[in-house]
Length: 115
Image (spheres, rainbow, N blue to C red):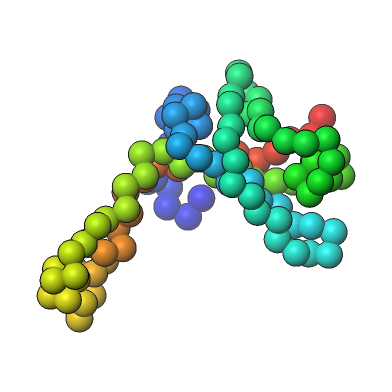
């Protein structure tokens, strides 16, 4: 992890997974293409369960033992700026970073483990 000061405890991470509004699963396919899909998840102990069919891309990636990452996002709040306010700050990089590109969210990343 690049920013160690943002690293969460195990309990904080599990809380985000449990309360997530949505999650995204990603991995590389057979030909190096990126497979990425939004999904809903449920956690029990240290297992994450996802809804899915018994065939298709998601299933194939798990059957083939791909390492996948699941990113769970909770408390997502995208800033809603008025046109007038955006116009007033559009040339001020510090304000753009603070107001326009400062989406507030919590996220946790889980890696699949095949046993």
